[in-house]
Image 1 (spheres, rainbow, N blue to C red):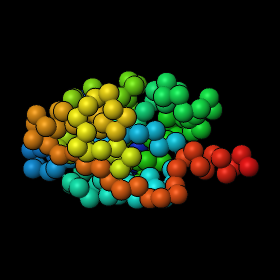
Image 2 (cartoon, rainbow, N blue to C red):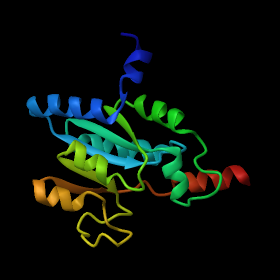
Image 3 (cartoon, rainbow, N blue to C red):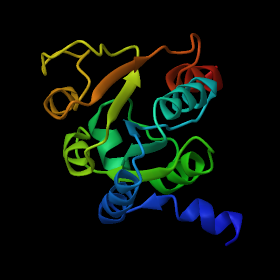
Length: 171
């Protein structure tokens, strides 16, 4: 298998992700899940994803589709990179084992389908928050509570954000 084929095999459908998750479970591996837009990949993203991967044996990234990103109201020009480009860049990272696109506003359905051991987000969220209406709530936390999984907030690398990069470019 070429490296490009290996990279392409990391971008999968929900059904394929579920199949691989079952194999990993049978092997006793711990799976971490995280999600985001990952529009313009930067040091903050790479550090965050690497730390998320270190929480378990495999890292699955739920990636917002272009339509899902637009519904978040970030700005009219977002995403800068389309979903196929963003998925390819994420899949190229050694820390990332699978990339699964989701079109919903939140990754809840994806988390319910995959049943990871750990759900991780950046520390702009609160791992202890259980009020689903709070902006600090980590989607999937209630499911982790029911299944005995973990919810983890990973420290952000200060000074790095896609919004800041876009602002710099515009100046």
